[in-house]
Amino acid sequence: MPAIVAALAMLDVWAPPSFVTPQHHRVLLSVVFLADAFALAWRRYAPVAVLVFVFASLTLSYLVMGSAPEALGTFLPPLVAIYSVGRYAEPRALVVAAPVALLGTLAHETMDPLFAMSGPALFFWALLAAAWPVGRAFRLREQAVESLSREAGELRVRQAREAEAAVAAERARIARELHDVVGHGLSVVVLQLVAAQGMLEGGDRPAASQRLVATERSAREALAEMRRLLGLLDEHDASLAPQPSLRDLGRLVEETRLAGVDIDLEVHGEPIQLPPGLELAAYRIVQEALTNVIRHARPARAHVQVACADGRLTVEVRDDGQSLSDPGRVGRGLAGMKERVALYDGELIVGPRPGGGFGVRASFPVLGS
Image (cartoon, rainbow, N blue to C red; front, side, top):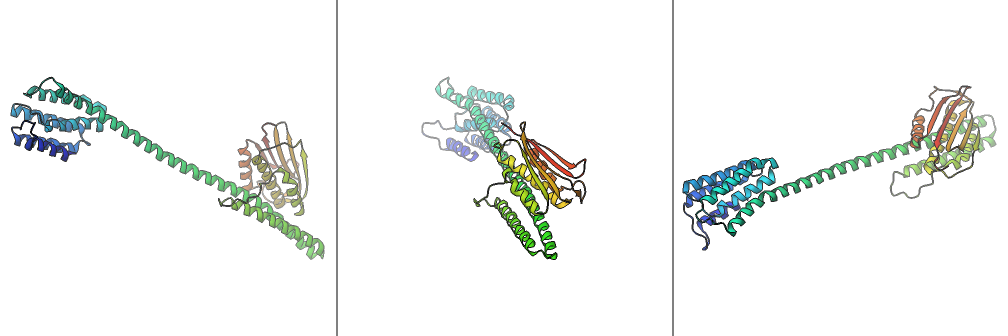
């Protein structure tokens, strides 16, 4: 920009068109016009100072020459300087810039021997007056673009964090599922193998064979469900089995019986349509509670109760065995239970029973029941 302004100003001084009156004091005008043009190089960093310099140098040159020429050098630098104040300075800069520009323009018109209140003069003033609003408009547009870019960047960061949180939550959910599935399945398998070994030592090969067949079935089912859960990590795996629900409690109880637990199942209330996620949460809580009965209660006797009444779904697992470990025997499973219950605004009671044994009771509100 400064080079273009300087070149146009020098052409106007040294090689004016035929319809332009040649300038006097060419050397002085060249020095002033070049100084003003190259001062514009600092218009981004000190726009008000540049404007003051441009108008002051032009006014001093008029005083030295005794007149004000009509040349591009007296028009382009002031025009760019006024625009730069609007483009790069705050609005409060007008307190200084406006009086300086007005006084400098009046000095030119007062000392211009060819000045006349006519169309060219009015056009000249209109251009100078429009330079600041145009610069200000570009500044506001730039600020709007920067604001949008900043907001877009923040939005991308938030989306990335939310995506990471979603992935972490999904992995935590899968970890809980694996804990419940593998923990229960392996507990059943271990007890069945122990029982089969005892039968073989006692010479009861048919019963041991039957127990080993049940062990194989339990292990295969646990492995199949573990593979299904790991398949959730593969976005291309579409062959996912249905999630277990309360309708599968009978099979869960039967598997637990095969592991040597004396267990009975009691269901109260009319069956209603429940959200799949709620049914899965209730099923996993019963599964985890039975896993802990297998691991910790001796003798292993348990009672499972499911009730749906008065707008609530309640699942309860009680055993009357003696705990072989500390009272907080559910360990990591308790954290999973708490998360599942909290997800559906339920209530969880876990701990030793007053009459002996251990109990797990989860209650969930059921909408529309």
